[in-house]
Length: 330
Image (cartoon, rainbow, N blue to C red; front, side):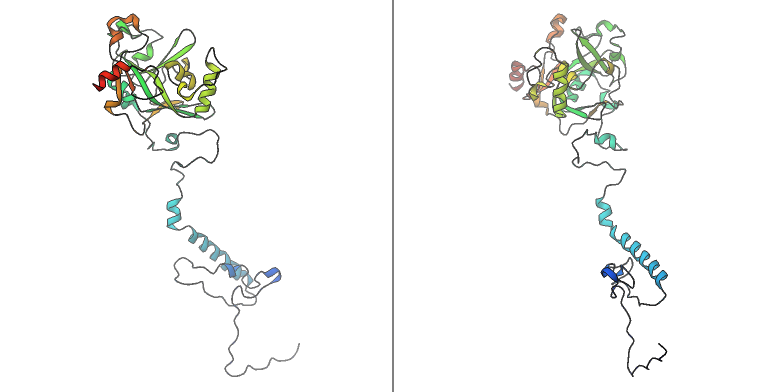
């Protein structure tokens, strides 16, 4: 106190404190606190950050510099490669789900719908080619709680309209019950049989023509399907159902997917509770069996017409016709 400082000797170079080199209480840097750990490259520089001298009375400017450098390094962490790996909020997440809760279709997560839901143009074709085209496609049912059930179509029947004696539209008659058969292609026609079971059809090109969905191969939500079938089926409710029994029939698949009369006249190309997605791989022409339809013995010669189609070798088909398979292979 009061003494003048001695003059420095010749050649003496004053010491400049490096940022982060002076430690304060608890090991934290006293000068430029925190900068000792932020000595990386800043955007646009080619080397380490500039060393800042320690100056008295410069604490506010130091803090401003620290904030700027932290922001710069935060921007640096968001490199182009990281951005390329991070999904855009607009893109669907196609990885494995992180929870076991209800899963939603990636189709509806995508604004562009590049996971192909089949639209009106798919259904706008005559009944026979449409019945064959259904094979291999995936029917999706979204329940009210968001759970989605999926089944690959393995068996269908074609009904040709007024000329077809086995069709509900035979003779061209229209009733409130069969109105869906006369609506635009892709409209559902759901009717009840035996007063307790439902069957689901999809209208095709041509008034009164439609496709009956007879069997599915379950590919998603099997346990939920099993619970629905156990709850809704009659009779042997105590016996556990095997996978191949879940959707191996027109009424079984309606039970497994919780489809009832309320789905009648819904648009399969537009509805958000049920739709059709393109399957990963359709069956080859040789794998498709064409044979007589089931349960229409009252329809005369139409009972023998080969208007039922199924995938050969599929264990989920409702009724296998060995004779037709042998004739197709001959």
